[in-house]
Image (cartoon, rainbow, N blue to C red; front, side, top):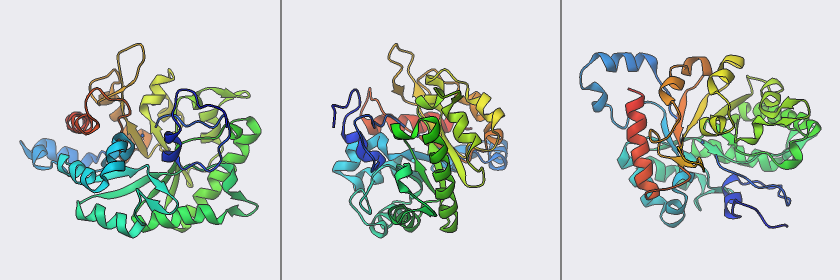
Length: 315
């Protein structure tokens, strides 16, 4: 295996990618549902919004944001996140049938003890999971564990290099549809999370367009990472218009006003989330998930500030 540039080897673990070659290097990745009728009612009652702290619909946190804390003290970290007001988390620590070292049953109990649920989680899907008739037993085990812990979505957060060619993408889209078909039978939807490379061309077409055009909307949803869309020079609203209803989950992380353009706390960067959230219905968005990957404070401090700022944006 050749040396991994830029991104460290331990990031591979968060994606649970079984196919790894010298070029398979995950990058970064990222929920909150805006309930229009509830928002209208809340806005009509002075002070009611603050009374709903911790119950603002599907406002979640991607646990990769606090990856080191989850590694050293998962129970304490989840308790702390719940104290900030979070009710939902998104997993990034599934490995060999366990979530952060716990069985699905054990981890669900820990979540429940803290008033948390985990509607979605990241587990990498590649064409290696495909068989002539669908998905293999290893992927079926992943879906079964997701269902047991309470997930409504299994999100693939990366694409192996071998799957990015025109022929590879065609096969991968078939696999996504198969994963969606099997997931649907288990009550767990399948989705894909983007980075910035999906906005480059493979052959004559942008990869993200290929994914959207060649996957069944009834079987494959998109977790659109708003940071990476903007980072790649794209406007999320244009994608909403081209493919309405395809984007059930958002990753909400902000883009720094620096040359590096790293992630920063929600509300402290350059992305106009207020404008984007006006179009949730067009996008089909039901979940807004905070993610923070770079830090100028401690991870937990940054996550708490992101929660507070996002809650204000969604008033």
